[in-house]
Structure formats: C-alpha cells, structure tokens
Amino acid sequence: EFRRVLFRSIMYDNILTNHNTIDSHLYFFNTGKYFVMWCGSYMYITYLNDKKRLGINDLNETKAIEAKTRIISSTHAILCCLYSSLYLINSIDYNIWANHIPMSSGFALFDAYIVTKHYNIFKKGYLPIVLHHVLLIIGPLVIIPTNSYIISQSYLFEFTVPILDYNWLLYHKKKQNTTLFKVNCGISLFTFFTFRILNNLYLTYKIENTNYTVKLFSLIFLLLNLNWFYGLIKLFNREKIN
Image 1 (cartoon, rainbow, N blue to C red):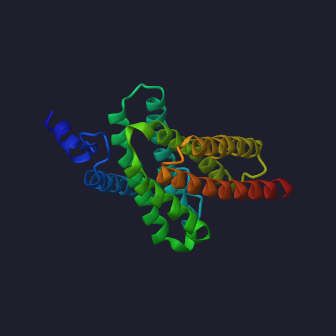
Image 2: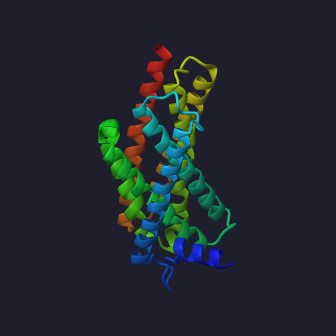
Image 3: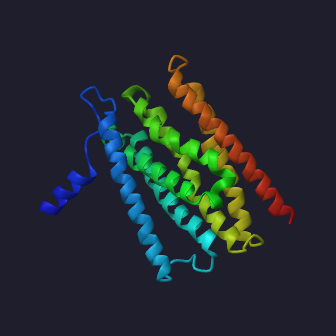
C-alpha cells in the first residue's frame, strides 16, 4: 500500500484547477516526470537490445537508434489513442483524460531531445519533427472543457504511428518486395489520409473562428500532416517503381 501511494505521489498530480483549466506549473512538472519515464524506457530498450532480446539487432548502429525511438513512439501512440478513444466514448471523464496529457508532452520533450542529440541521423526531417513536438508541449495549455473533445480527437492522429513504424522496420530489414510491406504501405496511406488529413480538416473546420490559438495550432498540424503525406506518397511510389 505504501509503495502504491508513493508511486502515485511521484507520477501523478492533478493538473486541473478548480475551473477545470490546466495549471501550467503542475502541467510542466508532470511533463518533466514523464520525460524521465520515457528516458528510462529508452535505456531499458537499449539494455534489451544489447542483450539481443529485440528484433533490431541486425540493423546498423544508426538505424538501431532510430528503431529504439520508434518503439517508444509506438508505445506513446497506443496510449494516446487509448485514452482519447475512451474519453470520446465517455468511458473516462475529463479529469482522467486531462491528467494523462503530460504523458504525451513528456514524450514530445524526450523525442525532441533524442533527435537533437542525434541530429546527424534525423537532420532530414528535423524541423518538422521539432515543430510538431513543440506544439504537443505547449498546445495542452489551451485545453478547457468546451474544446476538450476536439483536442482529444486530434490525438487520434497518433493512430498512424505504429503502422508507419512497422513499415519503417520492414523497409530497413530489406523486405520492400514482400507482400506484407506492400499491403502495409496501402494501410499506411489509407490510415494517414483518414486520421491525419480528413480528421485534421474536419477539426480545423469545427474549431470556432474566435478561438484563434486552437485554430492556428490545428492549421500548423494540417500543414505538417500534408507535408508528411506527400513524402509518404513519394516514398511508396519510388518503392513501387523499384
């Protein structure tokens, strides 16, 4: 019982004020806690990889670093989609959903740190990644009950991440000519278009024009998603030709 209470006190603080707005001090404090958690997860994955307990041992050192970050990103995406889906179908309340948000912003801070530390590996897509993560960190500060469903639905963008990460793994394991890779390419494009383009367009339309900050964030996400979708089409077309 003592350990359970201690864990809750370390990993959980109610970031909501009495008016159900985000308390910025507690929000950033909890973001820091989750940043440490994600860093610890990355270290554990590195340990497992060193012990040859993961399926990425045949990748070179550079790709192994990216593979480890993608394991973390897929885990984060699954958790994001789970919490947001439960909130959208009213299986959890606003308090529970809002208090999971630092988990996502902590991941964004962690991933921004990793791509900056290994800039030579990630420099091709560095600026869009960091911009996306900055929005994940500062965006939740505008959450209030009246816009919470729209923002929660935006977290469903993450649904595409595990699929794309798996495709990345197949690609770098030289399985571009397999049926599995080609099918997964089709699934990747479909889900990306559905969850990141159509969903983003719908949310941008639904946000009230008077809510300038949320509207601006949604438009920036839309531009990022369109850029990445264009890159996916180019990549998959090239592989189809080859």
